[in-house]
Image (spheres, rainbow, N blue to C red):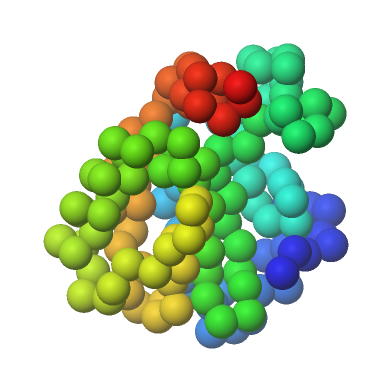
Length: 151
């Protein structure tokens, strides 16, 4: 489910009351921990953290007009989603996440290829997410993307 919001402020206003505080805390957590160089902007109808064209002029291979995506967060109908392209592209990072998750949450890890779903707002493992966000610099993400995803 993508929003048609064109600004982060409007997107944040649309979030349901039940998710608003947890979503704000997740966003703040990312902003405090994401390495320098990533930029926050609306991306794919969600709040995204991207490598801007000023750093990576090639952009995203699916649409070169778009900056290279890295992390997105979204308020979906039944959950909050964290999309992290690094766990999709880097098997070692995924293994680390799977190993560490039970240490931070009593909930079973609910995820797809790059998506982690949080259905219980009081069970979001913010400390783990802070660690995950810090694990890959802009240059490390570009290198990983070019070697694994872009091909």
